[in-house]
Image (tube, rainbow, N blue to C red; front, top):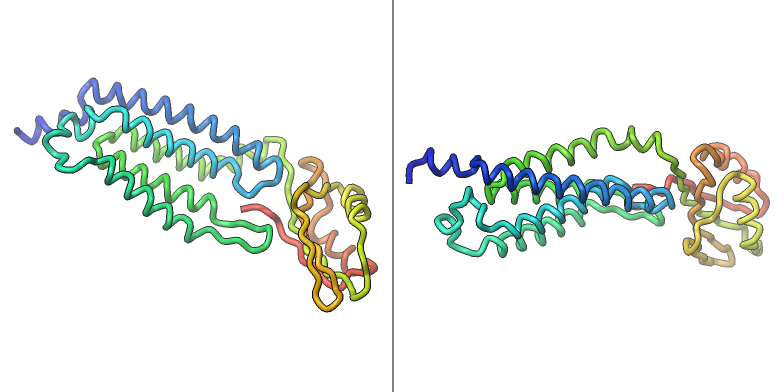
Length: 247
């Protein structure tokens, strides 16, 4: 078969129409993923809008591509596919998943690298789309992913949000803090202690309490420096550690 005939198959009218349908599905999955991610980010969870948007969109790309095998390789799948391409796709996605897990770091309540891991996995899906000949869909997925990484932070700045702070308090030997007191002090400073985040330990008679404080609103909550200044003279506190609890 002539080379130009093979190449034209990748940009035929039916191929472009199929890619257009795939792009619409990717856009819908992206919007729904961003919606779920916004809910998680608003409640102070590590994975936010970018992570959920990328994963949801890339998952939709793999799922819908599997439904159009007759359009793979420009409609010449029977000619090029000596093996089942879905097995190759499965192996690639699994391997990239392990690679993405390697960039995720956790220290206490702080988790970093989730968005990077999601972008690596999405990049593998872009490569898969190119490999099976869905060039327009690959270009669209790359464009949507880039826009998320570049501009989503600016969009999030206009949305209602709440920042979270990971707090570790080490108390002096013999001092026994009360949980209700910590809740009250947090509310007085514009925070609420997130449910299910308490972790309590004890070493040599000194208790260590770890938890996440979630701001009541976008503009409430004392700054880290102000909280550090208060904790440095707080009765019973021997040492402390404060950090933003986001990826």
